[in-house]
Each structure stands twice: as structure tokens, then as C-alpha cells.
Image (cartoon, rainbow, N blue to C red):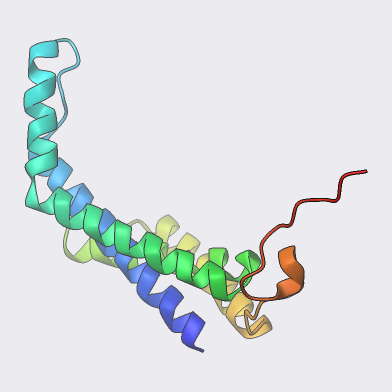
Length: 146
């Protein structure tokens, strides 16, 4: 259950981070690739934007929690559950970014919800035999040489 909570928080961090990045980039706008003199100004705006910085920090938090989850459970359990971020991102886009989320997107989100539910119910997510025999702290070991 603890791993599931970590994955859930990670997915929320990912969705919030992407929302901040989208909001920040909408405020900054596109770079004019035809004028190299504007590239540095645009890049400066990107790296100093509080929204971009916040989004990047949240995505870094997601990555750290994702790594923790992978140390605790199988990739085939962790990875699909991180797709909860798609659901959260759609709601954040609708509410905060005022995006028009079509019924096609909501239908796709429903498919994702069904998939997440099946994965969460079908397995405890505990480590199965794999690299290192499923023992914590063991990685892929070097094969013996002849």
C-alpha cells in the first residue's frame, strides 16, 4: 500500500509539473528561430520563469519518487500506475489552463482509469524474481567468464 501511495504522489507531481510548464511556456511564447539574436533572450526567459522553475522542481520530485517506486516494486506495476498523471493532467488543464478537453479525451481517460484499476487490483506490486533474484540490494550481476 505504501508503494501505491508513493506512485500516486509521484503522478500528482508529474501532472502539476507539466501544468506549470505549460502555463509558463504559454506566457513566454514561441522562439523566433529565424532570428538567432532572440534565442538567448527566449532561453533566459525560460530558465528564469517561476512557473518553469516550479514545473521542473515538481518533475524532479516525480523522478525521485519514481526511482523509489522502482526500487520497491516491479516496473510492470509501477510504470502503468504512473499513467494516473494523465488523468490528473487533464483535470488540471481543464480547470487551471482552461483547455477544451473533448469527449474523445475523456473517453481515453476512462480507458486509462480501467487499466490502472486492473493493474492496481491484480497485483500487490511486490518485487518478483528478476535481477538479483528479487532480493533488495542486488543488481544485475556480471556473468562468469570461462
